[in-house]
Length: 233
Ligand SMILES: *Cc1c(COP(=O)(O)O)cnc(C)c1O
Image (cartoon, rainbow, N blue to C red; front, side, top):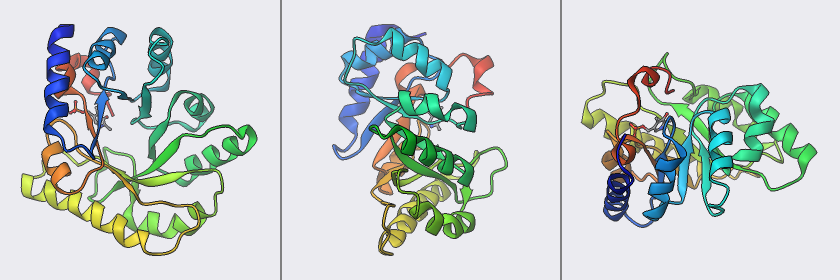
């Protein structure tokens, strides 16, 4: 693991290279609370976690850092929604109708502040990943727009492995263009302001294509333990 000083340096350097309108989410999955604390000291306030349980224990350890914005960036099982709603300010991974409906139902019961959500989409076929296919999401949008408690603010995507850089850029541009096209259609609830795209390997292209949030782990915290990499999605 990197030292706290190394994490601080990497985090502040990375922050200084991003345009001010792009929110840097430090992806701290599999990293200890001390690593989050180091990035926090460098001015990072947004952290991304992929698993509900892991986020719960880190939040408890970091309870003194009250101004962190927590982002869920991993697949959310329907039976963990209740807990996720208490832990996260943003849920990037609304990837199916059942999940959207479940979030909406629990928020209706709860009536408290609710996390903002993003719809996770796949613009290229990718059996390894969760997410709506474009046509499925388009078909579901009227129903999603009718959910009064779910707050969708935009789109999220993860690229399939192995795309050439020119194609990576193209997919990011397609996501942004699609969101802008959708935004002109007069929705009641749905908003199209946020584009969560770009990771350590591809974030400069995502920024170029109009990302509003980038999710960066390795470039800040170093490599994750390799046995865990396999399950990182
Ligand atoms: C792990 C992960 C990231 C960060 O990946 P890095 O390559 O370490 O920057 C970003 N987004 C999602 C959805 C992830 O699961």
